[in-house]
Image 1 (tube, one colour):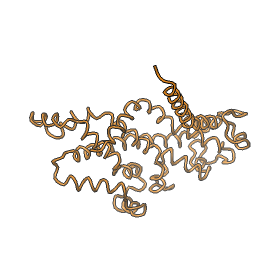
Image 2 (tube, helix red, strand yellow; image 1 turned 180 degrees about the horizontal axis):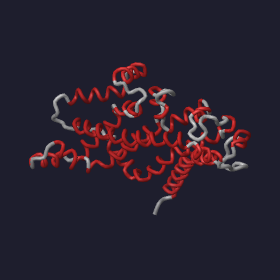
Image 3 (cartoon, rainbow, N blue to C red; image 1 turned 90 degrees about the vertical axis):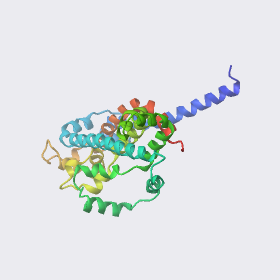
Image 4 (spheres, rainbow, N blue to C red; image 1 turned 135 degrees about the vertical axis):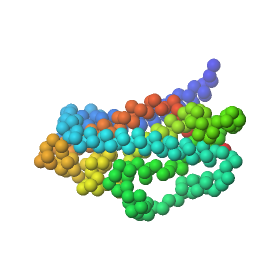
Length: 299
């Protein structure tokens, strides 16, 4: 039997968690409601959970302009899948290397990784290196490489998970049996590390999906507009609603910008943009808490 104080504490905790859950969910509900609001009503009355007049005009416009928006959606999916996969591969391989206690220079390498969490070269120098040395401007690599090399926080999470959850005796036994480091990494370490890999993969995927700064820095309207992600399209619309009209695949740029559902179409594109992440999250949720908790433990 629980005491009265325990029941009060439990009810209070549930009430606080309920408030936090509502604070997280209500903005999404308002976003969806706003996307189905008539544009003139949204301008006159603002966004409401129960608008006085509903409309699917914003979604109809997205379907008409799918040549532009659909291409941006495809670019976003490609960048997210490729960037997350390569990022996980690089981070897990380096984390496995840093987890080897007998590695010469391990302390120096770890210091260099941690140092990047505190300091970086800044936007100007990074832009110069990527544009003039790697020549990624107006290429698909511009949306992948800047976020790829390298997230030190994710790397440390994976490294700590390897150190605290992969028994050294298991790897030593594999070495005695003649297994090489790549065999140990691929057949022992990776299968035992799904929680942290799923956690880091989800965080990387969200970062790639929501990224718009790389497109802003490295893609221009003339040569790189065909590589805009869905976030870049939404950002352009926030700056100038004429962007989609000028790149219309169905009207040849002859669409009257004043006729666009400028307010609600932003909401509709935002809804379209977040749906894949919302759909994928439940499949990773069971790994997320365990991966964060165990991966953050200090060696």
